Length: 497
Image (cartoon, rainbow, N blue to C red; front, side):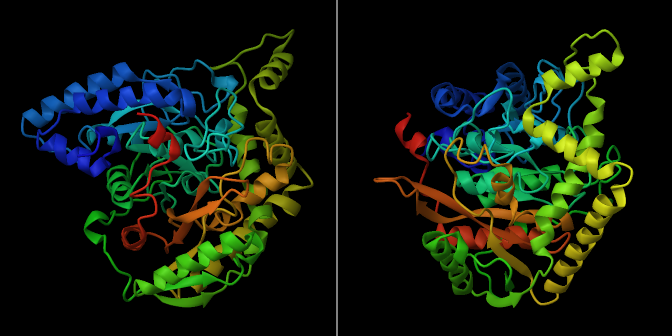
C-alpha cells in the first residue's frame, strides 16, 4: 500500500470512514511530508497545524459515532485569498500581511463540514494577479517537476502542494486561467466551474464578474468529489446560482462514445513548437480512440480575448482594491493627512503588477474613456459568449491547450508583461463566457536543455454552462486511458522520502 501522503482523496476518505486509519494519522503523515518537502517547494505562506489537529480529532469522533463524511480526513491546502477564521489571510500582498480572517469562506466551510483537514494557506500571485506565482510579495513557490521553474499562477501554491504530496486537495481561484494554467504546469487536475456554481463569499475579490473558486486534485475523481462538496447555492453570495447541482461522481465514465469533441479552428498549436504541437495532436487522437467524434468549431472572436479581459479585469480590480486604504484593516503607513496616508500605504503595500492593473483599470473607467474601452470590452465579451453558444450547437465538449507552453524558468517573462499575459490566451475566452473548464495532464515535453527534464502539459476540456458532470466524465475517461501522472510522480516526490 502506498504511503498516506501518496493516496488519493477518495482513498483516504474511504479508509478513514472504514476506520482503517484515523484522520489524526493521515494528518501526521502529511505534516511530516510538509516538513520534508516544503523547504524545496515553498507552497505555503503559513501552516495551520493546530487547526488541522483539532479538525482531525472532530472527524475521528464523528466517524466513531457512525457518521460518514464524504472527505473524511482529507488534507486540504487553502489558497491564501480565501478566508479561514482565525488564520492569517494575505492574498499574497504586503498590504494584508498579518491580517487575521474573522470568518470562513463558504467553499472552505463546506470542505471542513465534509471532513477536510486544513493544513495551510497556499501561496499565490498577489491578489491572484499573475500567471507564474512570481508576483507574490510574501514567498517563492517552486514547481515540483523542476524547482528552477515556476509552478504557474495565480494558484501556484495550491498546485505545488498537491503535486508534491503536501495535501491531497487544494482550493484555488480562477479569473482568467489561474486554476487551469498552473494545474497544467504541475501535472495535476484543476477545474473552473460555471460562474456562480461555487460561492465566492469569503474570497478576496480581484474581478468580481470573473472570479471563481474551484478544486485542485491529483485525480479527476478527487476533483469531482471536491467540487460536489463545494458547489451549490449560497445566500451570502448574490452571484451564486439558485440551481440544483448535478452529481458528478456517478457520471464518471471510461469512454467517450456518443460525445462530439470540438477542436477550435483559431487554436492551432503549430506555432507552439513541434514537440508541443505533437503532444496536443496526440491528445486529440486519444480522445478519438476513446470513441469521441472530432468536429471542427470556430470561435471567431477568440483573438480579442486578451484585450477584452485586460480591460474588464483591471477595471474591476481598480474598484475592488479601493477598499485597501489603510483605514479599516491591513497595512497603514502614516502621512501628514489622509490623502498622503492613502498614497504611502498603497505605494508600500501593493506590488508592481497590482499597481499596473489598477492604473490600467482606472484609466479604462475614467471619464472620456469608459465608452471607448470598458463598454466596448463588454460588447466583445458578449460576442465571445455567442461564439461558444454556436460552437456547442455542433459539439458536446471543446478540447484545446490549457497553456501555450510548459512551465518556464523563473524570470523568463518577468520583464515582459505582455509575454506573461499571452500565457492566458487559451483560458481567457472560457472565463469571459463563464463556462466550466478543466485541465487534465496530457503528456510531457523536454525542456530543451542538455539532459533536460520532462515537463507536464495540460489538455483543457470545456463544457457548456452547467454541464460540470459531462466535463468530469470526459476528463476521467481520458485520464484513466492515458494515466500520464497517475503512475508517475514529480522528481521532488521521488527524491525526498
